[in-house]
Image (tube, rainbow, N blue to C red):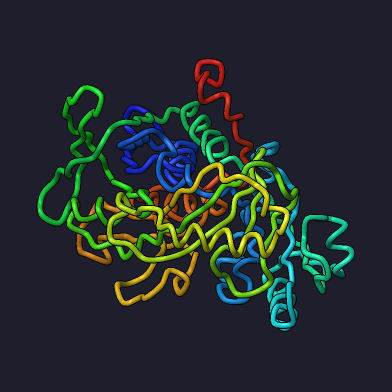
Length: 395
């Protein structure tokens, strides 16, 4: 395909999913322009706790998400070597109720293809001495940690090397086209205030919890619910493995070691505006209470920071809680869903599943464009994150 005449796709959203989609489409020979209203990864991507999911957290109650996570976990280890701390995770039983949950948890992990090994209480405490005395046991799974910025930068760097046009600080203010057909976007360069239009054969919304806001500009409805959660970072690394409570996902039941910090997460509620979340004090208190119950070694640690981040969950307005919504992802072709041609949305998912989300969206895009261009991202090793800052060298 001639680069000068290849179809052009505009991606709205400069988080991990947008970066992975830019990489995927550029590999398929499509011209890509990605716009982000702030800096790259400044939204949900740059605010999560950095868990590299095995999928075990969702194995019992959200098996589709569990399978997605373990599949992408394995792929990312191959294509982004060195981007993860492969420290494994423990799902820790604190009481008899947690031990009863084990009878559902272990088979669910095995059914999803997630390696799992049961440890006795003494074995678990030898792995993590900061756990409570007398725990009955823990399940070991292939969780890990990631840097919230560096992994996406590898996708952006590789996309740049393959010709993608990445434009941070560029906000979409509207769309162009006629009734029922979008042909581009109107943008403003935020540092200069200069406005312009960018033509597109297809516009892809990859804006996470902001997808609904962007969708309204195009006259489409995106069933994404922003579900914020509070995270609390404690000074010092109180554990080396990812620690989860062995029960159905709840508030403050995970501790993620991230560099020299221990991050407790997370609470969950539903919001209308992902730009107006707040950090409720009672949520911070709940993180501390539950986090220190799981890992008493945190009790004497100082709080480094507390913040909130909005998950982009797929669900309708009738949902009463973010816990009730799946962590899977979905691609919307708005020609089918809303009768508006030229717009596609990819939403939901986890940081771990960004490549798989991009593959799903790119498959829809190339099909709509009438092209034969298979996905190659599962086998293509990404450039290092440093290549993003040295694009000439990467090229």
